[in-house]
Length: 388
Ligand code: DOR
Ligand code: ZN
Image (cartoon, rainbow, N blue to C red; front, side, top):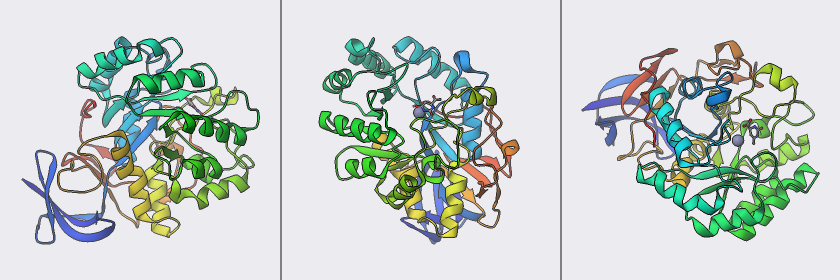
């Protein structure tokens, strides 16, 4: 039995108490549980449900190894990787191949979404059955409605009818040129089909449409922080006008999940217009800093980056610091704020759009009760993460 004692984010606020851990799981929490005092604020570790760790033919820009290391430095203990790899994750063989890589290489716990394309929709339940036979628990997504891996709404509807699974959608209508309308239109159409999880919502209007339905929404740091007037680099969905961005920020409380959409590309590819930004390592540090400054509520941050991700994706034993959950913590020293520098980050790509913004990086990270990071040093080997 191990007891971790200190200032803990517990049931919506910070209290001084001890956390008893047995076999990686929290078995008791209380003021009388004394143990070795941890300095700083003991927060639940983050869950980033939207990352692109590439690998395969795109290993030059990110791998499960480099991406998950970056996640760990950012206080994230569990990621959900996306299937638009090269080759893409659209059948059970490639799904298993990737999981084998993750088992050997991932520093943090790892889950993988299965891709939905026109070519696999008729077998999608069969593919899922084979994957679940091996006790993996995939969601389907991020389903594209535009571009290379896109499906028609009819195909999405067919999948919805055949499988009873969380489906995450990249909602951009293929026939609408205006980007704001494209998102609103796609969300409207999908809501008429059924329940979905909507990735990276970039407009207040779409967020509002999803709010109070049984569908769920996700927002990203880049859509909250930057507008198209300020950052000219490409991302899908696009950055919107500053007016739209401000509206999104004002409606942040309506979003269910905060996720990075960590989408690494080399600088060379960026100059050629490749869409997406790395972000798995900077999300929690930037938002912890914002909470510390009072720009957002710390309880909102935990709800959207820890509790709701676990709940919506059905990750048992993950979530807040509660009896029965894994002892996964990120410890932040609120006095150690510093500007983000690309050279300090661990993604392969070596650049960030958040250069110079202030952040508080975790000084310690615990996974299942074990200290895995301390003062910038990793205390475990790759492969420590569990695949789910
Ligand atoms: O900007 C983006 N980049 N949006 C996506 O939907 C895909 C992602 C990527 O994989 O690079
Ligand atoms: Zn994505």
